Image 1 (cartoon, rainbow, N blue to C red):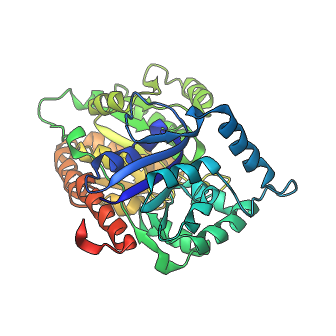
Image 2: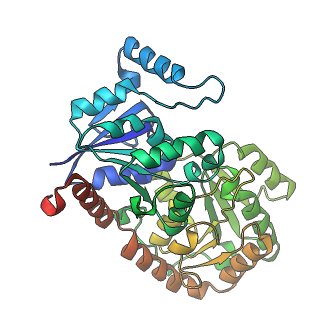
Image 3: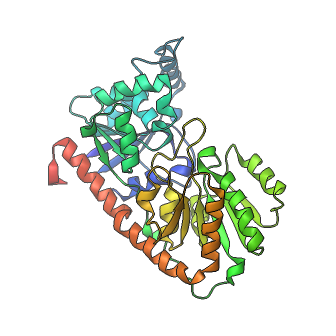
Length: 389
């Protein structure tokens, strides 16, 4: 059985459940995680972990010192980044494939690409090819990575285009969609339900500029004038939490919008079922940060059979069937976001049909079991084993 070393600096933030889904659904390879540190271990249990923070102080100190001294004091650019711990761990595993998760990690551990006969794979996810790729440091670093790496995975054509524009050879890039565990998001029914005027709109995600939550709240303020009993639930946390709360108060919406704060993945999966409409107003941030691909939450809510309202941003149009499973508008267009939400609230009879379209789309293109098997075949092809796994 092929052994794959998955490189992840922190295993695992709450917002990166999609990585865990791949790890636990790949049954044809032996996956190992090599990480600097861990968090949320109770939510993401995984036996085959190799963690720097759990090693002796000598190795931890040496690894951190080496990481510091290999950088230029002027530019902080490391021409030869080193991670002795990761190099030792991958050697102990005797890995057949090394798979770095995130462009930043891909470069930081690029020395692992020099292991003879061990293909080096990097998956890009969003900020790493958005705002990050504009920085002079990462412009240089990515040229090293693109030359040394064997394969680069992205979730959609928009991200693929960005990667090639940043200098990655097109022949090294392959699409690998985000996968959803459909059993965790069974479709909800719109039969016996509360009156439409009490409908619940959901926003969910890390509270950063690219999520566009400010525009979602402002749009809901317009909705609330016509449907005063409608409510909004906002799940998540982040640096903009305080400013978003203040915005809600300034719009006199404290009684209509509730913030849950951060939730575990299991709590989110349960609580999101209360909602009737999902709102994802993603934008390109002022520093160039963007979704890169598309938010996983859009797939999960469509798997539930929920109509969605979102923006024509990055790969979102690739995962929402416009006019069928949801509505898409321009970025930062508060009026259009409000109009589409009000249209849904005024026409609850179409929710079930739109929900079924979304469910079918996710079942067809984003079933984690199908995609995990596909990634295993990618590994096999890279290793030269072809169809032998």
